[in-house]
Image (cartoon, rainbow, N blue to C red; front, side):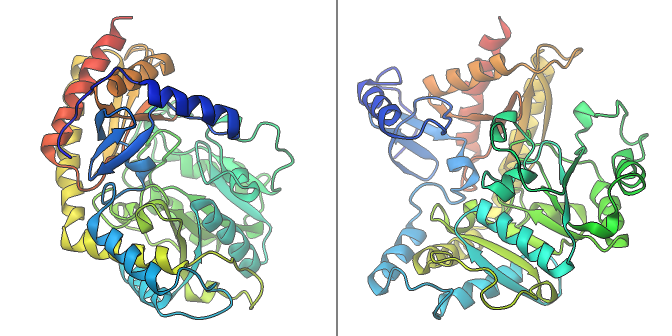
Length: 443
């Protein structure tokens, strides 16, 4: 499956029919970006039901690290499915859960003893971390960040703070959660500038929370995203996490690193937190872990796993087919040197996007690491006023011309292609997207 080709203006008639039936029969709580209806794909090229082909800049929302239908993963799935599809790892034993646990312990940062818990999704991993850290610490409170996204189940959505629609109508949520400003330098909530600010956003936690209304000895854990995902692909400045981790350690607060979107090689390292020279106590992995099959993992310091048998479990977590897919995913990332490719192609994309930023008034900020890149669309560079209408126009233009792209935050273009993406395909995609930026900038 080579290149892009728009045979009929999307959405075609087949796509329209499926969209209509989806709206009739499925829950309206799901929000979609545009009516792309996938039929099949291979690698970084996808085809819709009307025969249009596209370059994939989404990877199924940072899930398909190896692209669509990667041969090693398909082979692993087929082989395991012929042996047994399910037998509940929380009630019985099978070997590949141990094999994968050893791999996860090896690739996650921290040279300390670790243990692994499996679930089915990122939100389930977050729920497990909430329970684990509260049980172990015997403390009731949590810290999370403004702009964070940790999922939509009741505990996870209590930590989430990226869009009002995600929490509207669901209160009361989990009690004891305090949200603090994320180090979003382009839109600093304190109207300061880095590095002159001396990372005041960490001092703010100490001076305004811990010294005034949140007893730090009641905080079980702080949930972080090393790079914010739904919040707008926001990258913290150098030194931030070292200062933040020290404050947490001084107060014996467990740090939970949510790598659901940023992990599994997306930033050019196995886990994004590795860019910042710190070691979290707990790491949460999902999305790309099993190349599209439902699987998540909580990897923690072994001593934190003090909860007793029966305190937390799941019927489908650690599914043997998904586990085999994850083992094959890790193996393939290594063999294909995809961490290097993410760094190399990501550097090319950053350079090109920075050049686009210089040329176009509506591109306010470009940031990212590896193949996790955001380009914030604004009304103009001086005001920095968010421009969601402009961002949506760019996304729609890109889709109409053969590139699948979505947004994050209020008005940020989100670049999260498969880690197998080539520089040539990235160039073709960016050519289309720049034309979309030109069009959006005319209005």
